[in-house]
Image (cartoon, rainbow, N blue to C red):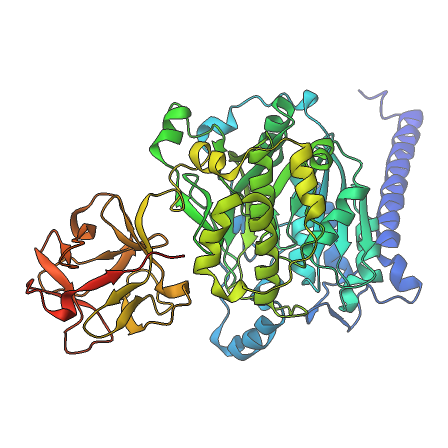
Length: 579
């Protein structure tokens, strides 16, 4: 030991200390130069420590803090404690309420909160226990191009989406991320975005649309550039959780004609809390071809033998988030390029995939959070309503056969709208030898309210007052109304079914007590308070539970009521069959 620290030993020891110190100095200098490169060139990007504000009015962290964060990201950490970490809600102090409201209008979510949450924030692992132990054969799975379309998106939500994809995707499976800019006007989405993503460890390509084209055409542009075997479409305000990608790719690996969606969890638009959605719901649609979530029926649970980790065969997809084999996407007709902007494309691709031999699945082991906004912050040329109606007309006339007339009946405002040339889409249907829409209803979604057998479908007209039942645009849990008959369908279309229901879409007339109000409640198929019997001779509609008749003789004739059956004119109803 004494010899080790002799003359030569001391010299060797000193050399080791000096060399080690020099190595660390070089590393530190490299990190500092990396983070100050833009500032040295006179730029004002997100990596400069100056008095400028980050996009959306949040200041950049100082240089020292950025260097510390960069080094710290590579080291083991304790439990995260920053705002919103582990998906926890962030509450704004009341003193900042006005600033919050002002920023909320920009993107229709709480920008003040979003900008205070780390771009790579932690999230809980929300998967079921069975999912965590599944073997997805990662080495055999196809590679993926993630396509994200954005228009004037907030900096923090877009970057958080990107970082969540990179941080929670197996690197060998993530070929690239393609960002398609649908003609944004925000400065931070220009050169600043390109410089930022150029420094990321995964290839990120920014593609610019020359003019506002909408989600559908922008996604088509992104898909055409994809290098991966699978295309995963995401919205620009999402956060992927641990293990999100493998279950999607695994189902496509097993069957290339599978289109696979994650469970779409909710990121609260105010607090940005991560809220786990039910994995026991699937996608459907109502009479107006509006997408809706419905409980998974018992028959589907039985098909999965009670294993909730197995994929759900969903009738339709929500549309924003799904993965599809690139070759199959092209084979089955990509998107309908005749559709405008947004709306209806999710039903179109769902009908097409099912009717043309594929399947649409929800993978319960895949969870992706999505900021659901109560209204869109964007405007659309021609108005949102007209665009969605045009797109829905294309869906109905290409894929729904005779059932399109059902939709026309409840959507009188679509009459006369020009929906463009559908000849290429009809030719596609013929080339792929696709099944008809009745097959879809019988085999994919037999629970659909379109498939229910009707005795009558149309107006329910009161002979005494001359008024008709009308939903008055009210929602579940409200009273049904009575108003003058207009003969235009829409809110005055009711079905009297072979289950003795009086229903509008998925809402049934319901009376829960003697002389109670006539309410609109979700149809439960159990009869009881929703059981009505129409007598063709007396023209009365008797409510089974109360043994009273539907009337329009209450104190306020703008509502129907039930009262003891008397045969009076206000208890006689003409159920008009729709043309």
